[in-house]
Amino acid sequence: MYPDVNRDTSGLTHATRILSCDEALVTDLPRPYHPAMFPFEVTHRDGPARRGKLTTPHGCVDTPVFMPVGTCATVKGVTPDQLRATQAQMILANTYHLHLRPGPQVIADLGGLHQFMGWDGPMLTDSGGFQVFSLTQLNKVTDEGVSFRSTIDGATVWLDAPTVIDIQNKLGADVIMVFDECPPLPSDRATLERAVDRSIRWAGQCKEAHHRDDQALFAIVQGGLEIDLRQRCAAALVDIGFEGYAIGGLSVGETHEQMVATLSPTTKCLPQDRPRYLMGVGTPKDMLAAVQAGVDMFDCTLPTRNGRNSQAFTATGYLKMRNEQYRTDDGPLEVGCACYTCQHFSRAYIRHMFNAGEMLGPTLTSIHNLSFFQRFMRRVRELIVENSLARIVEEFPIAANSGDGQEES
Ligand SMILES: [Zn+2]
Image 1 (cartoon, rainbow, N blue to C red):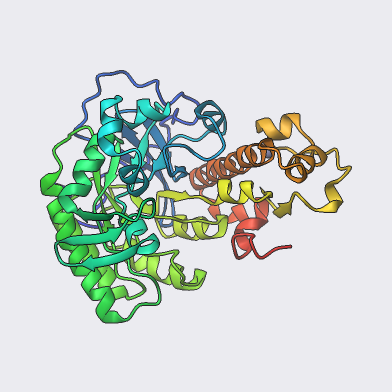
Image 2: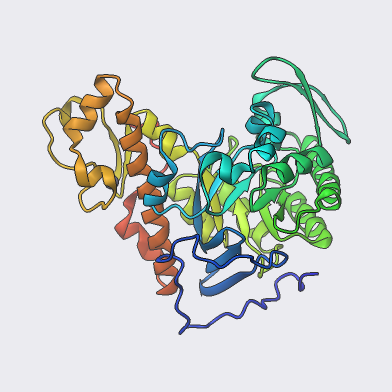
């Protein structure tokens, strides 16, 4: 179905083509849209880094793209209008959480996830594999599927490939993911090999079970830090053929250097003309390294999780908004930031919100952080077009620093 690996048919070097997604509302596409294609176009390159555009039934997405995470059908603490104002183009929701509560049939009966949560732009649901293997008490894992205890009520729940596709078909996101086994790191080689074998088997079953042609199905490459396993997994998935390819099982305990060492050999095995998605990543530094390895899509809870914990991202580092030093600081969270928070509120006010236990503290800081991540990615896209992505660390020194800010005081 797709061209040979590493053979680029994406129509590069259309230097005069004007990309309008950054300016356009994501709902501007005419409907009905012919759904079977999910076109992905790479328009510029800077080394392995790619600037592209993914089209979905709910609009187009500029890549590299950062997707805010709406775990339980809400990006925590912000409304869809506020989320759109941060320039978010595509968001993610978690199949695991929505399967347990309120249940996929409830959401389907209410018109699908877009309507249920009031987001009419592009959306992706994960498969639940990561949550099952990281959050739950596993009862049984076999080649057929996984039995685990619900983190909500302790009930025994069974998930397998056809079930995961059925759930995601009911939720109705534009991009859905195959069921995969995601082992923690470090894991021994036998564990990683078994997870690769199962993930390949389940990916094939997912493709067979998937019958909605308005949803793109992405596969997930596993293999831990073992390059040969990653490459074997990628080759097998490409052989089956999917509309996009994710790299899973990273950002699960390894170092930044280990993650980077795994990425390039993996992306080299993936088709040039389909999007690549690094799941659960990450910090500006991690995302920059991944973009430089040829990754196009990211998701992470950092902007909202850190926002709830009173931590604000800026180009030069992290601010802890409860700190005494901001008590009378009348400046914005970040000078030059165009977000709603920075346009209307002072650091002193935001500090006061947190110290008073007001809901607005997490909301305002999350709005700024989400806007910051979009601003960072927009600049990444612009610099790829200018063939000077390496300059991003001059404008965003935070992308050269380690960690997610949690260690800072
Ligand atoms: Zn701001």
